[in-house]
Amino acid sequence: MSYPRTHGMVGESTDASPFDPPIGVVLSSLALLLTDPQFKDLETIMMGDFEDVDDFRAEVLISSNKFTGAALNRILTEIDRAVDDYRRGIAHM
Image 1: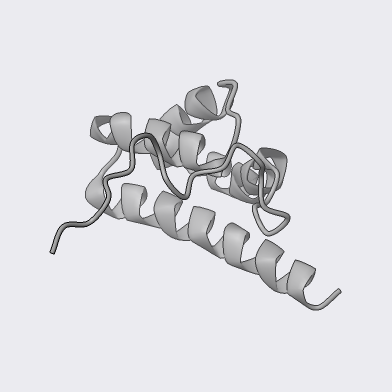
Image 2: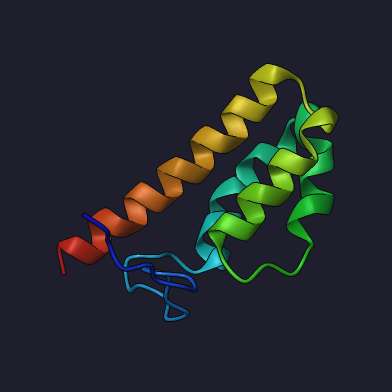
């Protein structure tokens, strides 16, 4: 049995979901980390122009060599926490 082939990107939309936090929400949640010297390079990354959280997370991962493994894990954990907190807040509205 053959199946029809579809071309192009399926399931991707250019519309942002209301559950996706604005990048500013995530960046402000990371501001506290900047007081710790091991996160000094994070400030430079945060100054970039990002369309969404996924773009920012990708830039952090690209720059992962600037952080220790523990510092990178902490940054990624804080990003996930900010996203989760935002989504919980939206869901309870």
